[in-house]
Image (tube, helix red, strand yellow):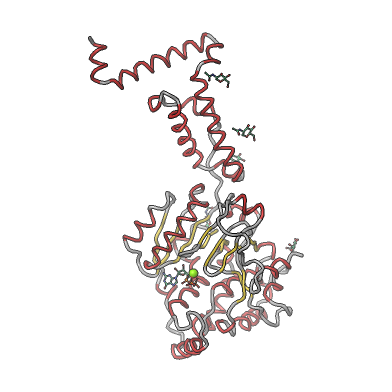
Length: 424
Ligand SMILES: Nc1nc2c(ncn2[C@@H]2O[C@H](COP(=O)(O)OP(=O)(O)OP(=O)(O)O)[C@@H](O)[C@H]2O)c(=O)[nH]1
Ligand SMILES: *[C@@H]1O[C@H](CO)[C@@H](O)[C@H](O)[C@H]1NC(C)=O
Ligand SMILES: *[C@@H]1O[C@H](CO)[C@@H](O)[C@H](O)[C@H]1NC(C)=O
Ligand SMILES: *[C@@H]1O[C@H](CO)[C@@H](O)[C@H](O)[C@H]1NC(C)=O
Ligand SMILES: *[C@@H]1O[C@H](CO)[C@@H](O)[C@H](O)[C@H]1NC(C)=O
Ligand SMILES: *[C@@H]1O[C@H](CO)[C@@H](O)[C@H](O)[C@H]1NC(C)=O
Ligand SMILES: [Mg+2]
């Protein structure tokens, strides 16, 4: 009677009772008889589970370096495997692999060894679609395994819609920051008549963003201020991301940790020739700074990347800073701070249109050792209209979606050859 009502009112509970009984008998038997233990299908469940786990572990190990094995995501992968495997056995959801068995069956890895780093994403509310696209690729190709935080910056408050659309893309922490007024807008001491004349002159030359003040605000902010933002104070390394860029390949190791372990301060994927009319006096201003402060010139610098005649003229080579993984302590350091102050005092961010790309590139090339600048040849990246597509094993390992024949590396306007020549 009791059994009948139990069965009719709750068949699942009945099955559960049976399974608990079977499990109990199983454990009693396995304690009594080693042979039973070897033959029994339950031990094969945990074996299969172990094998499935090995598959994830091994396939992961094949594409990711050992560091990944210390990643917290590893635990998530494990639980996914557990579910999948128990589903393929007849016992489905009722068998919970006992926690004790879980911990003894595998070595639960300790927390990941992550760098002190974040993504930095300067953008406008109107950039939303491009922001979503870039972030999604970064998460899919790299960050879902690592969970590095995101910091999004804007001189205007982000809208609720923007924040909602972006938050859904990642489990990692995201912060939305407002840029302080003085870090963004054209300073009062800039002679606006002179600035306007500069913009007009450049427009007449057909230069892109020639007439745009917001673009100049952006270049100056990226040159001298982003790393001073309060949300970035707690971080050392950053990876800059822009709207609508593409990441073609799995990033199979942690580039931040790479930077740290190899003492790198700056890195790039694309380098090219700058539009000379945007920076007519940037080089003479730089030379003036070096003459006054020769102690900041690193003995092992990359001047040969910037100049083909020992520094007399600038060859316009720069790292394309819409991609950069770099060390903010370098920007915060004395050499760069003084350099930026010197540039700022000349007003060239507004009288001309000095870009953060040549400014960062000149500083990294002169104040750092050439060993501290890194070309991430294995990171597939596109910012229209140029892309870097890895080749050979890098392309295969990264499951890259780009055509390895389509890469800017040795295009006529690329500066990669000059960079590589530094190390020959
Ligand atoms: N908040 C804010 N972000 C901006 C503004 N202008 C540009 N940005 C951001 O600054 C970065 C560089 O701006 P872009 O417009 O991409 O400039 P660019 O890369 O030189 O040129 P294109 O990408 O070819 O247009 C991007 O992340 C933009 O979203 C602005 O006025 N406000
Ligand atoms: C359990 O696994 C062992 C070793 O892999 C194997 O010899 C045995 O046949 C398996 N038993 C069942 C029921 O699958
Ligand atoms: C996992 O890798 C180890 C060592 O590389 C190897 O011995 C083992 O057979 C692999 N397991 C699977 C399931 O591929
Ligand atoms: C993983 O973490 C452990 C403990 O913190 C450490 O001993 C080991 O070296 C780490 N492995 C890797 C590959 O970093
Ligand atoms: C990360 O780097 C920043 C800037 O260098 C530093 O202030 C902070 O203490 C570091 N945090 C940790 C956890 O090391
Ligand atoms: C200078 O750079 C070369 C080439 O990478 C490197 O081998 C050397 O150790 C560096 N020397 C110093 C003093 O940094
Ligand atoms: Mg851009």
